[in-house]
Amino acid sequence: GMNKKELARNPALTEYVVKDLNDNPTLPWPDKTFDAVVCVVSVDYLTHPLEVFKEISRVLRPGGLCAISFSNRVFATKA
Image (tube, rainbow, N blue to C red; front, side, top):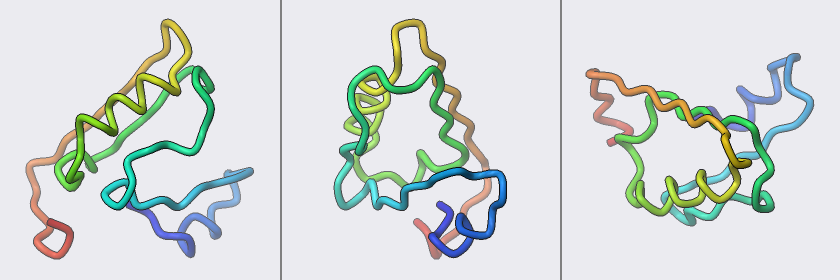
């Protein structure tokens, strides 16, 4: 994932949260907060993916979209 330093340099962001979902898979937002959630090439590195997917479902509004992408590349330092 992106770290705080990388996120801070992004001028398009109005806010961001850095959270280790392997340490605690609970997302820090209320129920039904988002219209969409995007997870880009990160699922392979989650130790509790089902809990994270449950959290995604919780924070999505009814009819919300969840887009998940995967990669066939392995980064051993992140695995």
